[in-house]
Length: 171
Image (cartoon, rainbow, N blue to C red; front, side, top):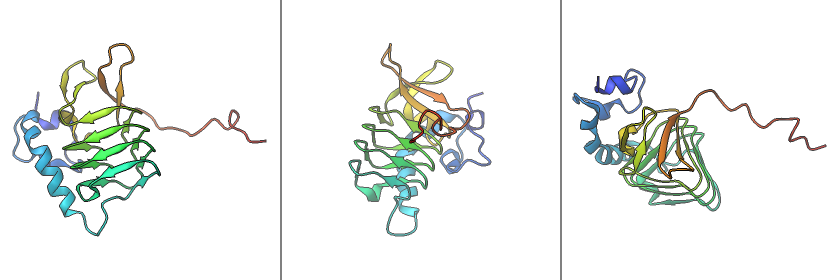
């Protein structure tokens, strides 16, 4: 019931090595930092930034950060490694990500949100855990609850179809 395979589809999971030999999902938590550094060091080439870091965004120690293809880091966002951010993510304006964080593919980190591996987050089932408990999970939205102030991690569904053409016509 609390095995890694209960939380992740390990067959197609890019970071499944994080859970090798682990009986319970929380046993991998202490591995996240070393795993992130090892993964970053294994990336071929001189750059580990494959996405777009917009003007005004900041990546501290880019050698300790991987940003996946198709990911956009908006102005005012700050990323401090070691950190891995998957493909096709959105790191919104003013978001702050630091230290031993692994964000999966197709995730959104809400504007102004501060996320570390130790940040307390409310999971979709209401459980409160450290953010590193969802390390590498895909299709998540990291957001702040406007009433309680708690960080929530919810599953994203569907895809964004773009701007409404009728509302954004430039006649």
